[in-house]
Each structure stands twice: as C-alpha cells, then as structure tokens.
Image (tube, rainbow, N blue to C red; front, side, top):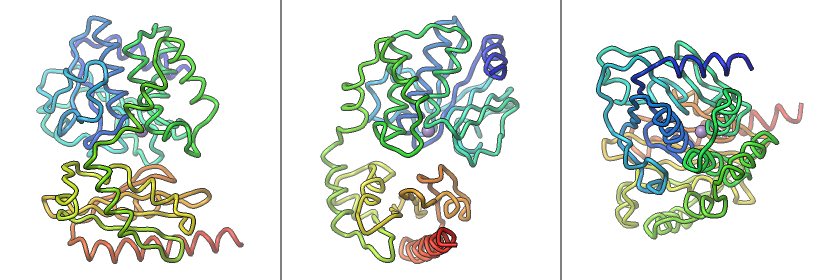
Length: 324
Ligand SMILES: [Mn+2]
C-alpha cells in the first residue's frame, strides 16, 4: 500500500488544489468530491471543487454542497480527478483550464486509461468513495462527520445500497468505519437512494409501461416529449435502467434518453454473469462490467436500432461462450 502513502504525500505537498469529478455526477462522484474538499479545507489548503454542469439538486444535502462550482479558474498546482473513467468525463471543468497542473487520477472504472500523472485505478473497489476511505486511513487522516457522510453517500449510491455484485467485505469495512465516525446510514440511504422527485417517478411510469423485452434484453427509449410529459428536467433516466434489469425475462437492460442537443445518452445494465461494458466501449463509452454507458450522435430511432442490435448480439455471444 505504499502507493497510498505516495498519493497522500503528493496531495499534502500541494497548496492550491482543484478537485474535479465527472459531469452528470452521481452520488459517488459528489460524495467523493465533497469528502476530499472537506479534508483539504481542514488541512488549510486553497481548494476548488468543480463539476461540469454544477451541483446536482438531489445531493444538495451533502456537506459543502454549496461550495461546489461549475467552472474551474486557474493557477492550481494540483488537480485531483475523482471517479472519472476518462479525461473527457471532467468536461469543461478540465477543458477550460489554461495550463493543466499535475493530475492525480483516483477511480474504480476498469476502463480508465490512466490519464493522470499519478494514477490509482482499482476496479475491485465498488466505489471511488470506498477507495478514499482507505486512502485516508492509510495516511492516518482522522475522519469527521462531514467526510464520513460524503463517503458513505458515495458507497451507498454506487452499490445500490450494498446490493450490487461488486460489493466486497472491504466495502462493508469502509461503511462500518464511516458509521463509527458518525455517518447516519438509514438517513443517507433514504435521502440519497430511495427518495425521488414525483417527476422522476412519473418518468419511471412512462418508461416501465413502454419497455420492450426480447431475447433477454429489456429496453426503452425516452424522448424529449416523454421527459416533458413527466415534467422531468434531468439528463438521465432517474435510475430507470436499474429497475428494467430486474425484469425476470431479461438479463440485460438499456435506456436511451434523447438530449436537447440531439445526441442520445445510453445507459446499460446486466445481471451476472452477463456484461455490458464491452458494448459501451465499442461505442466509445465505458463503465463497469454490469453498469456502463455511452453516447450516440444520431436520432433516437436510429440509436435504438443500433444499440438493441449490439446488445442482442453481445448477449448471444456471451451465452454461447458460457455453454462452451
Ligand atoms: Mn463510482
């Protein structure tokens, strides 16, 4: 674990630090961002926490949520990228920098190309927040209730409340340590994971009633009109893809969401032993074996044909490989 000491030393040697996570941030992204931000502020550093598109409403309960900015500024001597599967995931929080500083890349996506100057990519970890728990522990940095709340939010959301196939005893060990430090598990689970706005539930209603199931694949398209009908103003599917994969007759699910600028964002899920990351990667996306995504620059109807075809083909190939 000497690498963790090296990362700790490198971070503590910097003075003006930019911490960035990925655009369309989830709970792991924002929990990791605010945990590292809180730690470094406590260390007396000058800290900027940035995420392209700004803070997500859903996670406004996180400590320091009000300090998260949309734009980066300049003059940093260190950039810490958290939960970013590739460099483009930072969006304008990175691309707007005049001169990028030294980059430490901390992430758990297996598809991460190690774009940093110092990289710690651990696909065994169920969340980036879990990795950060061990980074702090290895460097003997005490937790406080704010950091603990942020990190446990990351763990709870990325593991769908400890129910995903990548949960390990280490995830639970981290969660236990964070609860010891004062994080409130039931409250975090309710706020970050269970509770959804009415509009998101309406979007689920539309999506669930329009979903198709064929050859083990469940899928649905959500047009701008569907989102409008639901009154939903988010860019994703509000977690619908994770529900679709629970359809008994399916083992893979896809949700295609039409975006304002004309492109289509695609979320994919599968149940073990099936994988969706290869499909996402083949369209220039990435993610985890059972949870991945990509974007397609084509009309929604065309994107549906292309992705449904690719998924059915991948499922057939994977089923054949299992039989062999
Ligand atoms: Mn994550």
